[in-house]
Image 1 (tube, rainbow, N blue to C red):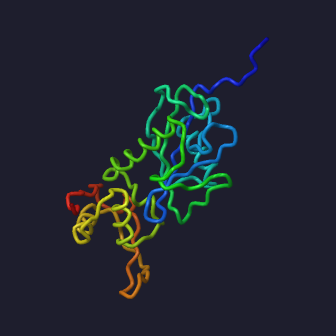
Image 2 (image 1 turned 180 degrees about the vertical axis):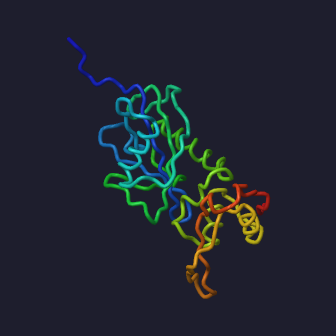
Image 3 (image 1 turned 90 degrees about the horizontal axis):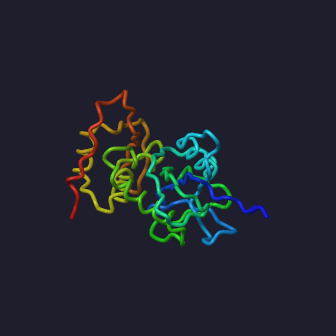
Length: 223
């Protein structure tokens, strides 16, 4: 008798969707109904002839309803660890989205990175690799900006860097380094932040309107 059981996918594209929520990073998980773990990362089998970047964008948009602000490939995982699709190889991507604009579709839920439910071993490895990728790319890619709304105060930007680094930053040193890196430009908008004077809003400066990217040097951290 012919075996009619579905064949496992040759490879999958998995997306670790990350946001900043309540002072900590959170990732988006979908609820499973038939698999061993009740939750999993968004993933799909690429369509015939579909490029990896296109497939990852489709997976992220299916989960969020809109395209993410920023995506990057984390790497390929094919070490024999179990995956919900039983695929031999999985290619993981990280997608960033500001929490204020993130409205996941039904069946998806945000979980703090430090308190996620059990995942398949391969997807757990993807989450761990993603957090290391984010930390390692902070001074090379606009990760902190992609987790904020289009306009923000410098205090909000510093808090985001502190969240991603897991360390406190000296306020004056951070702002001097930020100015030297030519990463932000002021807007004409201001926002009240309590009893003090209103704070000016800034935005991530387009490359064509600032000097070549220098990055931010994080040699001014509190111990």
